Length: 298
Image (cartoon, rainbow, N blue to C red):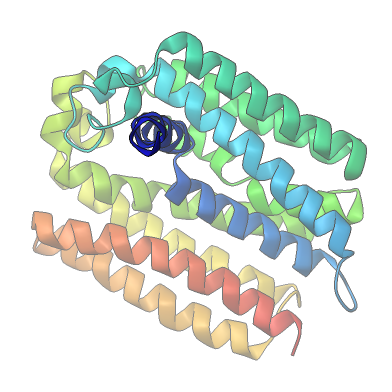
């Protein structure tokens, strides 16, 4: 009896892990983190209502997971050609397209319903628009057709703090738009650093990423230019008095390091340096938003 239960439990656990992998947990974690920061920054005094924070966090996470699953479904053939993604459940045949569609529909429906009933309609509609922007406009239309896919498609990736802000206030303010602008400017150097050391894989998959269509040197220059743009954008919260001196000091320090990475990529490229730049970009955004939150409650 014990052996039979183990024989059943192991395949079930493997399938549950496969479904979890469809949601891209690491990417989803950063999305939810930025959304939660937006919720707390939206509260002018004190803390936002706990029930709203919990409901919005779960709802946004579910819809983000649904969007990631649709992305995996659309890109399953491309994923099979790339070392970074060939271990995903669909290329390995662990899950079927029908199962993925059903799973995405369940997650998305639950998330949107939660946002509508327990948060507010604006947050639900904005989250739905973000889902469409990422899963359909970016994945199906932009990514396979234009080297500016990351720049244009970055709008959907920049929405999480706006969703969090709308969840708490029921509106989208100028400060929420600043948070959007920071992530929007951060996205190109973040993804192009990855694309630089994955250029051959993207070329094999037939995706027109910038280093494939315009070459590595041009892409490295764009990474540097966007880090400078990002540096300027991150000063805006201080300029508009959304944040104070602590945030300014940390933003300048983090931005200077990011620009230094961009400069080194441009002048003395190596794949190892591109990998470090990509990893630093994730740390950069996390620390920047965490500092915004700390500064808000000082």
